[in-house]
Length: 185
Image (spheres, one colour):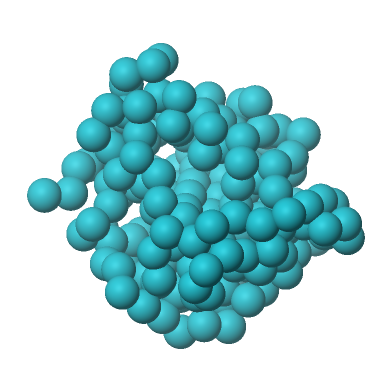
């Protein structure tokens, strides 16, 4: 597993309120598999992380500003959850456009917990089979998705998962899916 993502560039799109484990554990799995990961955000400097949405969980340094990047610079996209994080992202037109363009590129995109909210805002869940945190499922259904209650679901280039409890399966799957995905030039 140590080399299967060598040369793969992964954007991790997150904002204040990101659930720490949902950014940290997938990023570690990707880094361990040889990927280059970059935290992309609507903020500069750093973003505040949370534990179970309520407790302060430190911060993460932002590597790139979403206003200055394009999907062409990356091979895959990770959307961690936390309730506040995707809510902030879906209110930012540039972040939503970045996600929409990424999905349209056919490159792999993964979202966990509340992360699929941004996919719904980008109008890229219609006709797709997804899972998420239970409270997000109605929004996904209303946006045209087929919603299931499974640990991890892959439908084409989209991989989704339900919660931090599912991180082992999610991390394993995103490494597999990101290894398959088309590469940017």
